[in-house]
Length: 488
Image 1: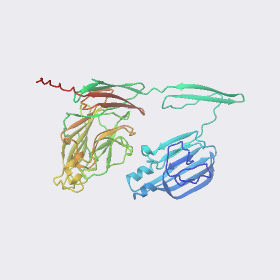
Image 2: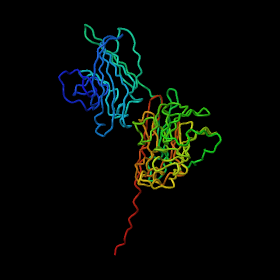
Image 3: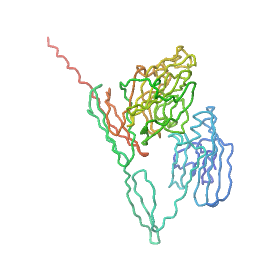
Image 4: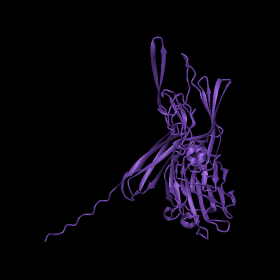
């Protein structure tokens, strides 16, 4: 039993085990890892018992994250391994505690390896490798069980769901030796994607049409993801429309409101049809009904916050005295979510409010637009809590993220990410501008590359994500003719 959240069957190894590594590993001899991390333990306990499966051993850790303690962040977790005599084992996780969002992520698997390998290293499984972020859905109160496969009879069958094409080999061993048989399994993706560019070679600034077609091979409605590009759609204020619904009222901070779509909208996102959306005053949408509010914005894709889906202006926002968030189902089938007169938390008060106005417009085919109206700082715009003490910079995105990501944070597009400097405002400002992600099973966008660029389109359906890229070559302009100077 090692302090760093692992078990091993090498009874003489007594060196350090604090550096987690994906399986297989030679040293340290880690064989069962419910929470392999650099830990300092309050205690490790064990207990023997028996149940319907047979005799078992429970090993329980209560431990702190050493790397986080070095940054004065408190983060602790309790967890167990249960070993049964038939070869089954379980990982069980109690509640964790921490003093920061980073601590929460680590206690839910960020920078942690969870898995196992056989003592000879010939078999292994990486259930979770924390370089990709925390475990989806977290660890608190959850259990995972490994059961050895039952003996295979001389005649019979075995049913499973392959996630990729593979070759299955069955080996029979008897007194006369061994014989094998193989079968090839081809997994056909639920959706195919074709992408093209016309023309594929241009000079800088020339228009290029990038087109795609997504073909559904099974059933369902895929989500098609493409780049965000500026369009001319106008911002139309819905706050006075009698059919608009107020989702978030004044004085709200750190909330997510769950809103069922009116008029039967089924918005395709993550390869699924969504009938409702979560709306945060912090300037983003989510399709996770369990999502907690998040004010700390990052680039996309963001594995620390995979629940954040579509973000027209993700920042630390608040409604203050006059801010509101509205929703409106429109007659053309589109759906508008509007943030009206909201403020950034830093640099504002109920008597000194920003006037930030922006929308997400969702379309039934999966397309969406970000539309911006007035994006004004508070009347008293000089505040040490704002970017370079100038809140006018934050009103134009100096500290905001604009973009989107799919539900597993394996794909994302950052249209803009402010980094709290005067140089990181949205170029030219956001007021009265719009951007669009074109979706749908087939479509096209016009781009104007200034240099050789690769454009990607992705389609997602039933947990399957496929992406295709096309490169547009930007050729150097021809050199001007060299004048011939007459002799003499």
